[in-house]
Image: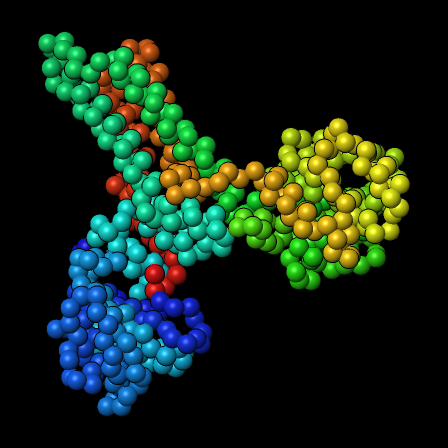
Length: 463
């Protein structure tokens, strides 16, 4: 790194807590910490061994500001690859801000968002995809997102890309060697072997690219559209699943006129619940816009919960199905009969046979009395059909990575087509290098200041 100034930031969340951590990184940060630290025995942090913790006080204007513990990490064996000091102080906002101001007064600069992780990347402690996974790990809100972020941070994704890129480098080296001996008409790269290898690489890149649909669903939440007629109990069910009064519930038809979204964690998976306007014929312009949005959300959802009033006649529900089924298409549809508490056993048995061929998945609940919601959550998990994710699975969760893989896929497909058409080696080499370029963009082997700035600006300060 060209800029090796000392940076400092509060790394714990804003607010009051039991303790807070203030982090410094950069050449000279241990000596800087020494200038504000006093040990009971007079020991200096500059003489301390790496990976040790020291008790003492932070001194400001000759007075004790706080009693602290200071952890010392030395270059190159630290998170950033530089000397690092972490000050654990009491969680008072006053104490945190005063220590940070004192460090800045002594010569440190306030760290920018993601600057610690950016230094780790620039100093070769991790590649770019691993650095991005740090932010994903911090933001993980379920077991599945945590597992994916940990896998990527440990290099599962990177190692696969490096393997593919190395293989491509071997190909292009042989082809470019042929160009040096073009007058002798020598062929160093067996075209049949190249074709087989290109096909395998294409298969690997496509597999990684295809995994994005799963990875994105796990990371952002599986979208579930809650649809149905007005007053069927959609908003009541949403509030029940979220355990809060998120949507207005009223006996007046058409209360929900816009889309309401929130997330819920069920058995380690995140679902993005989307409450929509009730479907009905209306002359109200605003409500009509809400109903249009309902059908838009059906298109965007992976799972659709059709909430039907169990008291409604079979003929009416069948009529509504002519509107809903075409809109749902091949998406997972669950028919939820609500208000089961007010119908007889005979009517329930009658409803069980309704549209069973078109919609095999159905459940009877009472959102008002919290009946059947546990079974509904189980149905959602089953409908999500998310495979068990192990530490060995390489799954793409980042849009930037997905776009780069798509471009790499197009490039390697051109290589295969070129081999079939027996085009010259210089064109083959160009396509291979293009594929390598896009794979290198993911890991940061090829990067620009603009890309790096965009990535790390999304991090929190102190990380």
